[in-house]
Length: 220
Image (cartoon, rainbow, N blue to C red):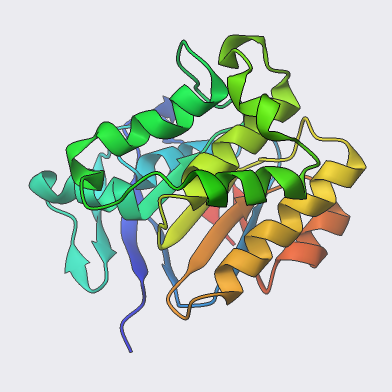
């Protein structure tokens, strides 16, 4: 069986002291993989996830999705299937609901529709009521923004989530809900997987079933 995602000799043009911040990184992601990416601060973990979705440039190497190389013209579709959640989610002007609806305006999501009942169900998991949807997005706390980013990703039904310390601003109760939702999401379909960056040892064990370590741009 082909892996969902295959990375071959991926290197970044960005360097520190003459050494690439990503240096010939190779690994695969199979269906059901709950891959935890560890390593010290500055080792290139966030850069790797951003590079995988072409948010940062690639010096060399190849990315294969569902067995096929990700050519330039396929990047929009690829990003609709492989969604990156950064530490500080980007939300636009308007309400929470405006932000959740906006992604359905993109051409790549034209065959999907916004389902308010599904959104409300996800919000209830975090003990947020319908009034939360009318909150101005720019006034949300860091933790609230992370919740919105997760819901926005889940309602698009991607195949892979790239999670960059996604619970860093959540309290313990909402952290638990977040973890449970992502693990439930991956178990609900046979073709899903995620890569999760965390510095929390306990979280590594709770969410992961595979672990890789990045050190100075190299996997070990």
